Each structure stands twice: as structure tokens, then as C-alpha cells.
Image (cartoon, rainbow, N blue to C red; front, side):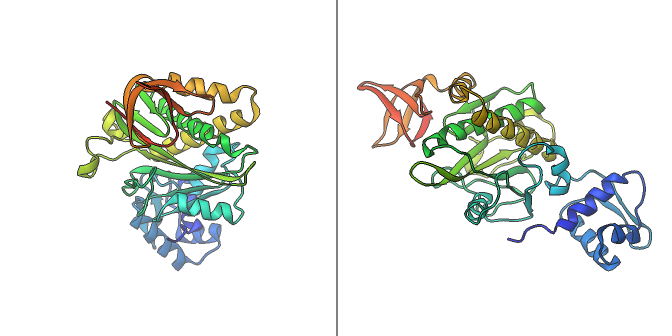
Length: 328
């Protein structure tokens, strides 16, 4: 689980800034401060990652296509002005971005630290669920936040992250109808396109740090058999291949906006609750089965002031605190 060599991103950025010409190995070596043989080795590494680079040692190198890798050197300029613009960490392969982000948070990583992976081998969803993480097909992203909020506001922050994903997808694909499912799923036509996993380290009255993990299915064309009925991707929903760099940029900008509004705008808490309910087809008037406290069923009645789902049962209103909610 090694962090991606930062020099790879610098080579990509250099080649992107000279997109129409061949760049000599000598020039790359000088610009980056490495030997020519090291340039050759790093170019081979980029090719192994799927970056289309033409040329060779004698002639120099040229990008044949803009790479769709979530490298810090590619993303940072695109999210300038957000809290995420200079703390982006990239991994080719990782166990779980949330696990690494939680460890980094504990070690003092600054607010706005972003952890991205091309592939997760132990991606985690809510509860005991895994998150299917096909290589370079989706966004596997975790961010470290240090809000001056009580732990009771963690759910609101999670709902705000759902709104951020919703806004990001709508911004790049406005024709797609995106739906939110409480507390942390984003759906297209009833199938899951994104999930959110929020984890927290806190004291009784204050949050030390919160990690928000977001997985978005972008260019997957096939899922494992056990997920085919429940999962979709942006590509399957639209018939178009998407730039993950564009999707990730939209996500980080949207998340930055939601987070800043929550901390700074009066009434933001109530506005998040209202907007989440407006963008969700299932928080009101939906017949559901809840797997909590032995299980119960009823009709959804919206969110309470803390952000928990209310369900009207034969015995009155019940609050869902953490159970899985399924439409009947």
C-alpha cells in the first residue's frame, strides 16, 4: 500500500503543458531534477498505470491522451480555492481510503486532507458491507475534516455529503435524475451509484476529526453478480464514458461548498434537512422494512431535527438510528 510517487504526477503535468510537442528526456530530467534513466523508469510506470505516452528515450515523449488518473498534480489546480487544494494523496492500490484517512487524522493530518485510490482491495461500506472498487473505474475518496461541531452533528455532515454527491452528478450530467436514500446512498433509477461512509473520532462535546468516505461508480460496465440488480454507474446510466478527473473535481468543489455553508451560514442545519428530503423520493410516504431492534415496518415520515429517519408504524412513530431501511 504505497503512496504514488509524486514525480509521476509532475511528469504528467509537464507533458500536458507541452501537449502538442515531443518533450525530450533531457528536458524532463532537468525540470523534475532527476536522471534520464529515472525518467525512463517513471514513464514505464505511467504506461503500466494506463497512461498513453508515445515516444522513447531517443526521441522524447508525448502524451497521446489526457490521462484519467486522480493524481494530485492534475487535480490540485482544478480545485484551487477549496480546503482540498494542496493536501491530495494518491495511491495506485490501497486497502481502504477510509482506514488510511482515519490513521492520518489520528496522526494530525490537516483538515482538507484527501485520500484517493485507483483501486481498493478492502473498500468498506456501511455496516459490514464491502465496496466494490474496480481499478480506475470509480472515485474512491476519503477526506479528513476537523469541524468545530459537537458529535451529534456528525449525521448532518453525512447528509450534507450526500447532497454534495447529488449536486456533483447533476452538475456534470444534468439530464440524469439523481435520488438520495437515507442515510448515505445515492441512486439512479433505484440502483446505487454512490455510497458514503462517515467515521468519527470525538470527545464527549467536540469532534476531534471526521472522515467522510465517498465511493462513486463512474465507468463500470459490469458488476459482480451479487451487485448487478442493485448497483449502477454513471456510464451505465448515460451510455457515455466519463472523465473521473471531472467527476472528482465536481465532487470536491461541491463538498467544499456544503461544508463551508454548514459551518458558516445561519440556518444551514435546517436547510440541509429540508434539501435532503426534497431530493429524496423515500424519506416521506414510502412503505419500508427496517432491520433494527428485531425489525419493523411502516411508512416514512421525514427526518427529525437531528437528521434521523422517522417511520410511522402500527404502534406510532419510531426513529431509525442506524438500521438498514428497505423499500417494500
